[in-house]
Length: 118
Image (cartoon, rainbow, N blue to C red; front, top):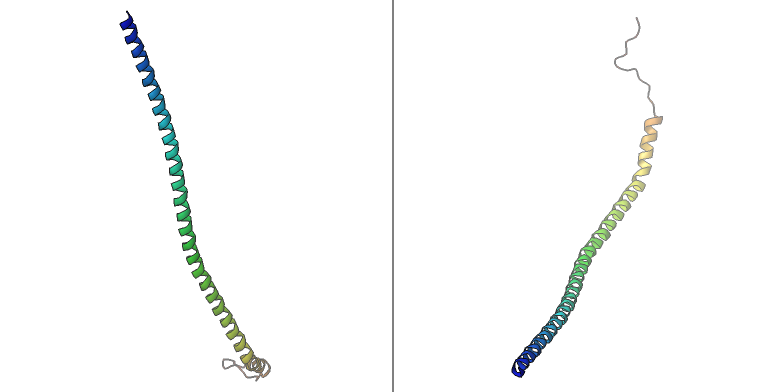
């Protein structure tokens, strides 16, 4: 009977050890999953920061060239306005004389299609 009782005790102890090992394995698995999740989060954050930095660099390059284009267009517009203003001032006097002479110098004539009433 003692050998049976020892056998049962050994089985119970073995079962307890197996249960303890199983619980320890579950804990290790949980810790490892948590660690893997933290590593993945850190890697995702690093990747996101890297991509945002690349995006900002590209955006700066594009916006910088647009800024250059806008400055160039602004300069061309200013130059065109300056040219038109100087042309206006150069030609204003002669155009005013032509306009006034056309309006004021009237030479009355009979129209070629006019037929006197008979």
